[in-house]
Amino acid sequence: VEEFPPSGSNGVTLRCRSRVKSSCPIQSKDYALPNSSWSQGMMDLYSRFLEMCKDGTWKRIPSYSNSVDHIPGKAFWESLKLMSEKERKDTRLFPRNMDTEGVGFEYAMFLNPSEKRMVCLFQPGPYLEGPSGFAHGGSTATIIDSTIGSCATFVAGRVMTANLSINYRNPIPLGSVVLVDSKVDQVEGRKVFLSCHVRSIDGQTLHAEATALFIRLDSTKSLQQQMSCQ
Ligand SMILES: CCCCCCCCCC(=O)SCCNC(=O)CCNC(=O)[C@H](O)C(C)(C)COP(=O)(O)OP(=O)(O)OC[C@H]1O[C@@H](n2cnc3c(N)ncnc32)[C@H](O)[C@@H]1OP(=O)(O)O
Image 1 (cartoon, rainbow, N blue to C red):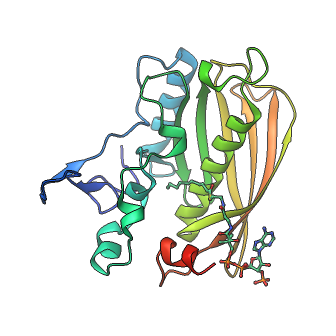
Image 2: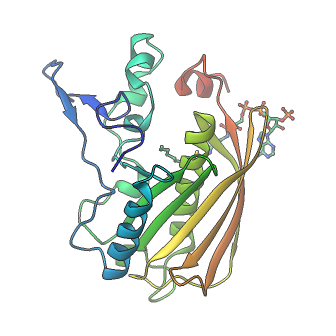
């Protein structure tokens, strides 16, 4: 199954992170692969999407624990000294900050480039509880922001969320599996407008719907430079 970006591209090949300088390339862990905490429903859905990847319509998106590892052409940015120390340091991507499998955000994303669409299979674990037995609204916002943000990133490049509006329609049971389905509706200059629906696997329950505005960052400046200008 083809991956996007392809394995071994700059987006996924890392240099060793250690105090001892080394240039040996290492592959960072891909968290969007099945683990023992995934329910049968999650596995079935994942297999279904993998099938749809076979003709190239959909692409499986790897997922790492640090946002820098996702930046396409990371080596290019580094070579121009446009990637700051702050961006390089050992931070963790918020939805990938729990080491124990199954307790937090379990998810895998698939991109349909021609439809400018990103779908995320999401299984919220027990540490995401809000109302008893159900996912916290902030965790739902997080997975929506991540899915929409990834969609905007793959379509438009480096972006930041400027606005995210969510209507919560039905609570999401912890341990269930939902589909977070997002797409780019419009691009106007630096503005990327997206929409998203969160539904149960059978499509019968609408859990949430959202709209978002992302702003494309000036590609000639690093994120750090842009933020320090404000
Ligand atoms: C593959 C892995 C990817 C991982 C995905 C993870 C996704 C996670 C995404 C996030 O959570 S990002 C973190 C949350 N977001 C922020 O912290 C953003 C904080 N805000 C900012 O940094 C700046 O406001 C921002 C970069 C969004 C825009 O600042 P700029 O100085 O670049 O743009 P500017 O203010 O000049 O606005 C550009 C245009 O957008 C418009 N605009 C900006 N913010 C807006 C807003 N909030 N609502 C409506 N319009 C807005 C603005 O009016 C203007 O329109 P016009 O060109 O027509 O004049």
